[in-house]
Image (cartoon, rainbow, N blue to C red):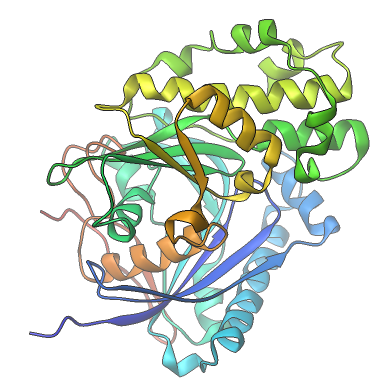
Amino acid sequence: MTALVTTAIGLMSGTSMDGVDAALLVTDGRDVVRPGAAVSVPYPPEFRSRLRDLIEGAGDRDRVRLDLTRRHADAVRQVLAAGGLAQGDVDVIGFHGHTISHAPERGMTDQLGDAALLAELTEIDVVHDLRSADVAAGGQGAPLVPVYHRALLAGTALPVAVLNVGGVANVTWIGPGEGELLGFDTGPGNGLIDDWVRARTGADFDEDGRMAARGRVDEALVARFMREPYLALPPPKSLDRNTFAVTTRALMDGTSPEDGAATLTAITAEAAARARDHLPSLPDTWVVVGGGRRNPTLMKELRRRLGVRVVPGEAAGLDGDGLEAQAFAYLAVRSLRGLPISYPGVTGVPEPMTGGILARAAAGIRQAGGTAS
């Protein structure tokens, strides 16, 4: 029997707060995966500032929610144009929204966005709220992308690690045995570096790692950061973008801008290297995706501290920018078909689970998720 394939759009607004990634994907929700066009739509500085204020506990939530949703609708229009498709060619949108806070230990995860409005604006069904069912079942609600990494890297030499460096960094470990899959947040990603650079220069990030490259890594500060209790915890585990913000401000007090950027870059790399302590076996290759792969200074630190082959996603045939958006298209299709999107070895749920809520373009909202075998 021919697998039933679906054309989907995935949307991702990541913890770096730089914009919306949108990607087309044709998939059966299992093995058939054909990525299509992808676009990145930057947030203007004014909106990024309002979003940051909201995450820090201030601002108008309703205004930001509606603005964010309309920007996602625009990203849908742009990726349709890039792929030469019409609205009617797409079956579903996977809408992550933007994480405002994430505290699974309190049974809470908050992704901002208006799925009903997005369905109305795009005239396409929308699967959203993909983390809540997992958290309600006692899971971490993150990361969700490992099942997509596994589908993409089937047939490659295993084990392999995929390190996604956004605002927070997370790793997927894919083992050689049937169903061997592990994933967790390793520690800070670009978030601490971005905040440091913004506070000292006004720039949004350390472009090409140049500021860090001019600085000197303070290994004593790196070692002090590595005493953070989270880093020693066994998975499953996950982070909020601001988990280490207070600690880092105290730790880096008095450090020069360049040395601070260099040290925070080293901290991101060392935290990823410490994640090896929690892997069942050590990969010979780490594939880096997300914005962090574009930072040569960070990539150099990762190679030095991991001591193995470290390559950008493109070297493994992956779209390092569009990968997470593709993943949420894939997860939306799995949600529609009642297939698991989270697993005991990744989020810590008792059994493989599906999840998500379906907002129909013309018929209201119904629950799409639940427990699946």
